Structure formats: C-alpha cells, structure tokens
Length: 414
Ligand code: GAL
Picture 1: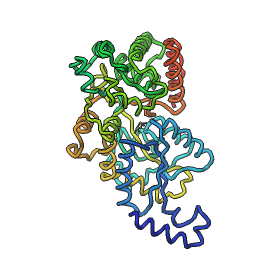
Picture 2: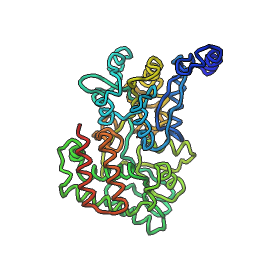
Picture 3: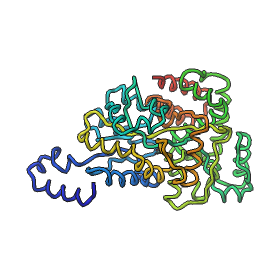
Picture 4: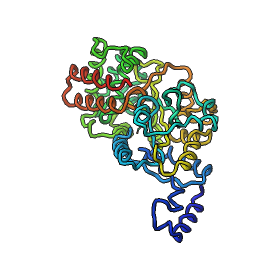
C-alpha cells in the first residue's frame, strides 16, 4: 500500500460514521500492527526493508508495534500481557523452535499450512527449518531469516595496536589474547551485555568444550548438566567473564557493541545482527571469527512471524506473512539485518561478503540451536537460564550455576 493511498483512506474514514467508532473504521481495517523488538540501528534498517516490500506488495498499512530491548527482553513481557488480555497485535515476531512451540501449545497462533501450499513455501524453505515451525504436521509461522549466534567480532585497530595479530581459534589462544589486551590497558578486552548475552557466551563455551553433539544433549536430555565436562566449561566461562566489562549486567547488546566501536574492547561475542548495527552507526573497522573452539559449528536461530488468534486484521496479516516469505521480502530484509534468507533460492552474490560466507557456512557447517534465542529452549527455560546467569555474574558460584542451569534446561524439554 502506498503511503498516499493510506492517507486518502484515512481522510475518507474521517468523514465516515465508522471513524467515530474506532475499531471498525476503514483506516483500522487497513492497519497491520507488526510487533517486534527491532526499534533501532541495524535491526530497524532490516525491518524498514521488509516494510518497503510490504508497501509495494500489499494494499494495507504497516503500523509499527516495536518495543525496544535486545532479544525481546522487554517486548516479550508486553506481548504476553497483551495476549492474555485478548489484545493481540496483527502479527508478532517469534523464534523458530521451542519458543514458537510455547505459543502453539497455548493456542495463541493459527495454523498456516494451507498458506504454505498456496505461496509455494513448502518448496522454498528447508525442511529442517519447517520442522522447527511445526507441531503435529501443522506449520505455524513464516521465517524471515537465519542468524548465526556464535560469532566473535573484533576491533581490528585495538587488536593490532596490542600486538594480537592471529585470530584466536582455540580457548587457549583466546585467553592469551585477552590477557595481552588486559596487559596493554584495554579496559574491557571482551565486551558483553546483560543476562541473555552472557547466556550466549556460556553456550559458545559449552559448544567448544562439549562439541556440537554434547551441546545439543544439554537441551534434549542427552547430556548430563551435572557432569565434570560441564563443570570444566563453567570454569572456562568464569575465566572469560573476568575479562569482560564489570558493568555488564546493566548493558544491552548495543551498549556492549559500543565498547567495541569506541575502542574500549577488543572482542565482542554476539550474533550476526551486530555488523549491520555497526554499519548503521558508521563503524567499519571490525573483523570476525567463529567463537574459539567452535570450529565449523553454526549455532542458529530464526526469526519468524505468526498469525495470532484474535488478530484484528487477519487478511492484512496474511499479506504481511506472504511478504515475509517472498524472495523480494527476504532479500530487502536480510541485506540490512545481517542475517541470511531462510529461503534456499538465494543468489549469494547479491549479499555483502559476510553474508555470502554465512550462506555457505549454513549449507556445510554442523548446525546447533540457540537456547538464548528460543530455538532450543522454551520461554520458561530461557527466563530461568537468564536469571541463573545473572546471579552468577555477581556471585561467581559455579556449582550454583551448574545446578540452576540443569533445572532451567529441564523446563525447556517440551
Ligand atoms: C534476537 C533476534 C535477532 C536480534 C537479536 C538482538 O532474539 O532473533 O533478530 O534482533 O535478538 O535483539
């Protein structure tokens, strides 16, 4: 829907009796409220790309329902209370995997299987991903992308000024590089944000220490959280945390990213939404490497959109979902967002260099799901893990963390 046409509809609605009634006015019927946590920087740029395609493809009007806060830290609470009060947005962002299963189990989202056939999505999307969007053979959301979580971003000048010339590929290399940075007076050798971003760091360490299969077992019950191997991983995590910014618990991921951009940190562990945010903020002096010891393991997560039960404008939502699943929508979104399209009919050379490498890695690497971003863990498990990791950030009690993570992971097996 073109803006001018929206404005015209709005003007007509002002003259109509329905305009007084609010909810049923013509303008409201055109509105599609899209609920995300993409409010700023690279995330907003990605959303804007998708909205531009929606405006071209759909005769509806985008209404931005974004609630700021990385990983949905604020948005998910607002969403839960809106859903409980019967005030669903027309669509909302949800992660593929266990997090989506929560909404499905609660009966809060509609079955989209028939639309998948109509739009050709069954062929366009990888079957493994569709499995993560399905329960009992029914598909409940449309994925926009695949992100990689286990990436270490670097400030090239900070590293070279400190004489760190080789990329760390093992935990030992990494600890040595962090020690060098510390000795050279870099205030936060490893930048990190609050709870969920610390959980990402713990997950990356456990991928290194347990290997991909052992790591998967943490979430599906195949690996004992109370084993000595996990205890060793937690010790490594504790050691790494000692090189991070002390005020980490008050930082969103963008604040931690700013430490890297400002040259106050040498490394930053974050998903690959980080580089598009750097670019949106004019920072280009960065490099990247898979988290040391993760080898070619690709820790994935996927953002998807749903049709909520009780959406006010289901036809408008369907047009949004069709846009999200379309080749044009995925390209406009992902080029800006830093992720790669969920669709497989992608021309890699249309994308910037980092995404080209991610497109290749997604095909060839060993895939493991992210807990912090809902692929492996239910919302209850993520919340319990975040609170355990936040507690550890201040009390440094590794045995307590091990016990609390075992309990959190048990909540996630649905
Ligand atoms: C994730 C989401 C990403 C990115 C990130 C930081 O949960 O899947 O797309 O937005 O949070 O906010």
